[in-house]
Amino acid sequence: MTNNLNVAILGLGGIAHAFAQDAANVAGTTLYGAASRALPKAQEFADQYHIPHAYGSYEDAIADAAVDAVYIATPHRFHFSEIMTALRAGKHVLSEKAIVMSSHELRQVSALAKKQNKVVMEAQTIYHMPLYAQLRAMQQADVFGDIRVIDVMFGSNNSNTDPNSRLLDPQLAGGALLDIGVYALSAARMFQPDAPQLLNTTMKMGPTSVDDRSVASFTNNYGILTNVSLSFYGRLPKQISVATTKGMLTIMDYPRAQAAVFTDINRKATTITAGETNKAMAYELADFAEACQNPSAHRDDWQWTTEVMDAMTAMRRSWGYLYPFEDNSAFQQ
Image (cartoon, rainbow, N blue to C red; front, side):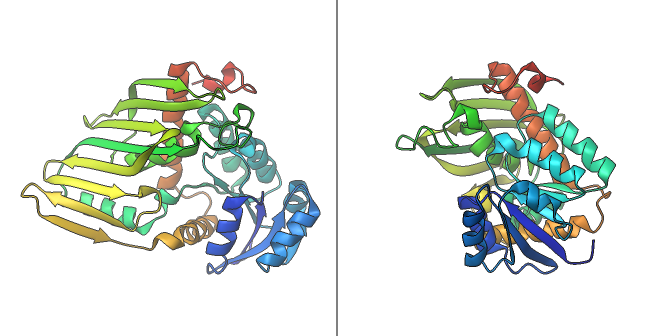
């Protein structure tokens, strides 16, 4: 691979359009190709974003020797097979969240990536927004004090959503956990020195037999308690609150946040800013390109991805919830 990374986009839905808009001019990268199951759709997408190559199948994009990496923007049911195919072909992979369906799948991805000496990265905005790097540095400098309790919520209202959409169709791994819960758990992980371990959880099913609403409680070796609330048919704020011995840290719209507020014990509020919300996908691609220069290096983001997937798998195991296309191997530890 040269210093420039040629990236092909697999799957051309809404998130792919956002990626093509936001990450078009990231240094050291070229949006080289667009792939769809229908060549006319791929060509239309490529023309719209001035991408030089269009492919009528994902396999054709992966087989192109000029493609260094793929960005996977398909429904997450299909990520595992697409990631494994790309790795076997010697490509680096940036995959939308949730990166795969279970810890069992992620272990296989990790093993193959190591064998092939290729990077797999989750396109989880939280891991790449400059604000979180700033907050973690301040935490390490003891600005906030010791963390005691983390409350995080995310709720959207899909009452009018097409029940056959990827959000609500169990055959496409719809439901709150993998779509929005991955954000909540990733945000909570940012403020903890080690992995949260599940204490208890409960879930209520929605009308299309995907998880609608759930709550979960976690702890870790430092005694931090984390509470997560998710809802798919009732809106909740995208908010994380971190209670500390020196005050409270609050982040609104945390998936792509550029600002946080720390309120100290005297109720003095200080706003902390870093980065820009509208560059979220550019930050992802820039970090991905940097990682591809040294695939064998340890990466915190991969550790976080692994631990969040462990947490989501533990929640589903507690619920006894498998998607129709899964068997019990999904819950192997």
